[in-house]
Image 1 (tube, rainbow, N blue to C red):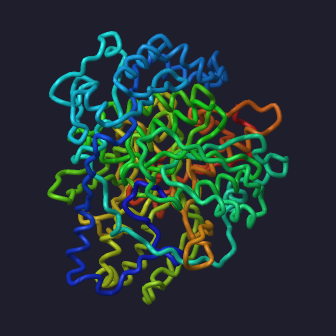
Image 2: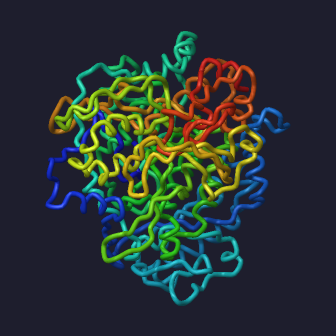
Image 3: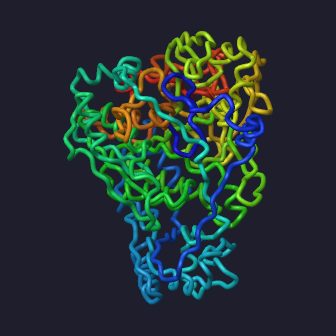
Length: 636
């Protein structure tokens, strides 16, 4: 699962929509309503007596140097290789000095606002009553908007000393209560999880197919390592403990801890979030003796904000106790809309790069799920009352999925025979996956082609975008230039594709192969099996059933890669792996590469991008799957 996706993509026996044959009086009309529009909720105004929090993000020193050194300390051919920093060393070189932040504290205290500084010297966490915030910024927080001046949110500039004003890059959280800052009503996208009585094959998927058993046999278990889970929903600890006990790995409750990070103090959306639960369970499964640290932010809406991501990552990097992190939450592909509405900072992608580059400088391996919407990304083209008008295109706008300082993990499907349609009491015959391939629902196309009336009978399969978004995220992100480590790698900035969806999101059968070039950050970087029907189960006790459910998506891959990093880091006398991308693109071009590119152009797509024969990279699966035993031997 990938938290910011509008639907879940699986159509097999594990997940299915509980859709009657006649879902509405006009199911076709409703179907395309789901594709072209999205229901929203307006943010509620806040009273002046309420206490809230916001961030003042200060300008880093020597930003270009920070980016270069983040790559250099992780590159074997660099004289700075493995010279990882502490958070305090990072501040000395790139953050604002204590003299500046102390002056900020005194200034804010005069305005009845409390503040603390992060160890990197870049973020002031500020908390106080709305009344005091309104007075300082000369605004009404319920209609505050961004201006050219980073401290201005109303018609007038605040009275802030010039020497402090010039240290500010942007402010985060002030505009959260503006009615233009909408959240999404995802009630129409709910699914029913079926109980899964089959044995869990989760650990076996990574251990057997990607050669983890060799590491386990050598006594590597992640012992002494901690994995950070970046999330925005809470979990019930007993679920993870039960899962680990059932899988015969360390189930000591002390291995799991939760740290609430600094965010606007609102309640989390879900105290028993299945995304967080799955991430924790699988990170702790693949690294069976590691500690799991959950960095829990307060998700203020269905849309995750820049402040929430920055606060979670800065909390993890400030502590500097985890050797790897995993994030399965998408940031937001609608950011350009919110920037245009002046309720989100235009600096959002830059802030993420600054923070994630800090993680790379500290030697932390960071992983993120590439998403489950295939190559397509929604953008907002208009807003009418409480409905957004959507347009789906090949221009991904999620700034974290393809950030150049994080390793993006895509999804694959292992060989499988699927009897598609049985949950709909229809016999569509078998759909066969003959070899590992990119996660894309085009493997169902032959069954749909044999039964052309099926989608007419169940059009909500299109409307819920199970068809329209059934693939592993991947493509080109124009938010960032092509990073240095991807330059001149065969397959980067070229592509093969087949347009498996029509312009109205219906399956397009036997599409021709397309060739082309593009630019920007190519993603994902690596891939692994994410398909629920290949055997993934998670445990989350609810009112009905035994608690075992099928689950998957690219966000079951990210925590497992983070766990692999922890396992390798636990080897005696082994230095931290650090940021993977600086090395893996070099290793992929060598004869003894630990990566297997999935390069077929047939039966291998994310509903658009396919393999590129003769290359080491494609935008459906990145460098491909990983032989972790080989990676352990060749990674420096």
